[in-house]
Amino acid sequence: MSRQIQAVRGMNDLLPEVVGAWQHVEAAAARVLAAYGYREVRLPLLERTDLFARSIGEVTDIVEKEMYTFEDRNGDSLTLRPEGTAGCVRAGIEHSLFHNQVQRLWYAGAMFRHERPQKGRYRQFHQIGVEAFGFDGPDVDAELMAMCARLWDALALTGLKLEINSLGTAGSRSAYRAELVRYLQGCRARLDEDSQRRLETNPLRILDSKSPEMQEVVSGAPRLCDYLDEASRRHFDDLRAFLDALEIEYVVNERLVRGLDYYTRTVFEWTTDRLGAQGTVCAGGRYDGLVEQLGGRATPAAGFALGMERLVELLEPGDPRADAVAPDAYVAVTGPAMHADGMVLSERLRDAGLRATLHCGGGSLKSQMKRADRSGARFALILGEAEIEEGFVTVKPLRDERPQLRVARDAIISFLLDEAAASARNCER
Image (cartoon, rainbow, N blue to C red; front, side, top):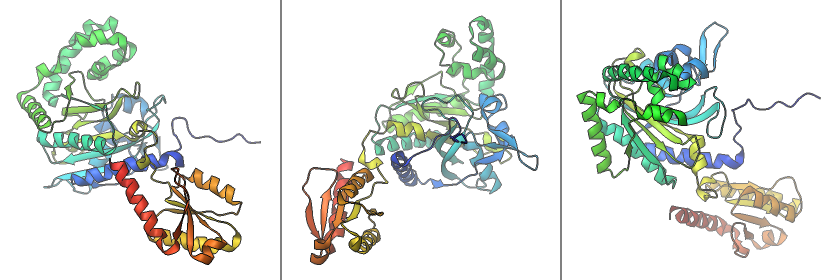
């Protein structure tokens, strides 16, 4: 017998039991982003490898070790996207979206990195990315963070902490990098293996090391804020003033850097202590030089990406709003003669915008009630000979202790719509 084929390690199936929670997060994000004037763009999973080498940085961990790269039949080097910003910028340049105009864009989908799989970090993972092009002031930075805060409220998430920092311009960061390398070379014997490698390639990432033995070295490092140019310092001060005006709480984390080379000035992360080591739920910042770096005209830009797997993990268990795929009603019949009536009733419910699952395949009423309960439906609607002859539907509540009742056939849609509206109001409280 042939061996069973399983999913690729770190690439997970999303089964129906969890998809409702994903749809809940996606729908909430789409509503919030629309409220701020952001429009959706849909981008390819595959891009030319050069796009990521030029944008992310050839000496970053992502490009050096984590990308899924291969040659196609034409000999072109292609890569499954490890992040979304580079592809969004490529699309904007290719379709002239940035010429004499501003753009607020968002996208969602799978990203791919060959990392060691662990909870909250997978080889195929999903993000919602948000990008703003043509805005050079700190106001759009603050707006991006305000959008996140509004989404957390929409999802009833608590305990998320906003950390912010400024990396300055490429020039000021270069001066800081030289001083940081001097300091770290004096501590070389105390650097772990990862940090020794990064010292030669991307020394700022050492500041973000999670290794406990590296914390003393990092704590004594020069401070990036002491090397900021005056314009970057003013930009950061104005950002903080906007956040204060919006009453969005934050902390300045002087060790916060991002793993991608294209970031400038503002960087930020929303973190939680509920997910163990993978505590970053959302991260972003400014990348004012990236459009020009990839062949477009100089265009200021800022954005963020939030991790879907981690957001879904933070949802409260049993939140009815997350059960987006559960039917409003499960239609059961007591015999084959009533099946056509059950089909007609189910179609009427769907015409009214209700979700209805019709029992198929026969079986006793008891077995049908078991399936109705497993479906997650709020009500079972039962049709038997008496119901059809007398023009009513027997309604059995499945999610509370109310007794079953009779509802006239011509009133069943109004009954279910009223119940759905009442449930939605309860969720908003």
